[in-house]
Image (cartoon, rainbow, N blue to C red; front, side, top):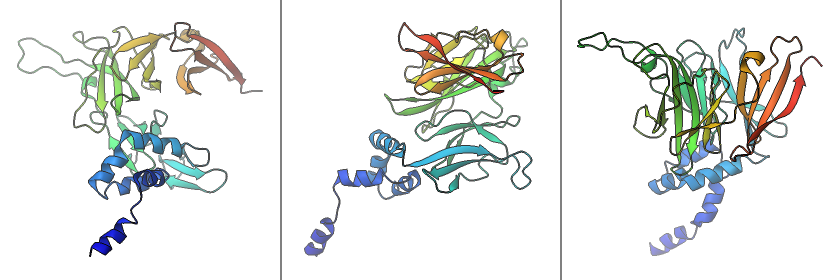
Length: 323
């Protein structure tokens, strides 16, 4: 019997070799291996392994994931959206995600992938928000995102006077990561109050993989800032960047949940029309289409040295769609 145990033990791989093998597997396989034992679950769920797996998954020769929505006129798959993976170079595209995760509603990504997770929004009326992992088919429906309590106006019962709970007409979302705690956080900002007793703007945070509900952020945003739901926050270097309607930019530190500001894009929002924030090669970017123009020209700007006092915007290019 002892000989059998010794023979079995001789085939056990060292931890570093085992981690090397597992970190090169697809995410869906890694999730399945978490059920082998508690030690494997802890190892494969650790922040160090997740970071290692992410780095190797982002190599040029690995699968690439992209999003494509079906045309609304598609009779077989109306209002459907899919993630696909494709091995580069060449090779057929493979459909990811189950088709019913949005319950038949049209959904679109709100954020870029963050450690394999994507914040999705159902664009139909009161469709709600989801955090999805296209590689593992995991979907989390965010609570209180279809009909947020703060977006409704209600009379406080048993009150001696007609008191109203806070009500807001606009909510803007962002998705970030705290490297110090390994927490993924969804942040939302409410603005455009229709209650005289409510602050102009308030913010809440939802931490993934915790039993907690939405809670107020450690600090509240500047009360004069208002936002658009169609212009979500951009996550970059630990900060969420929210674009205000007046063209200003406020930042939210995902770690300590405090607010700050960043230089606004050097454009007049009343003159150029809609401005959208994005991320270009590690820099905060902004782009817009020329308003009142038949040329359909787009301007792209980058915020250089955003972490220093010398932060400034510079125009990257102008794209003339009619050329």
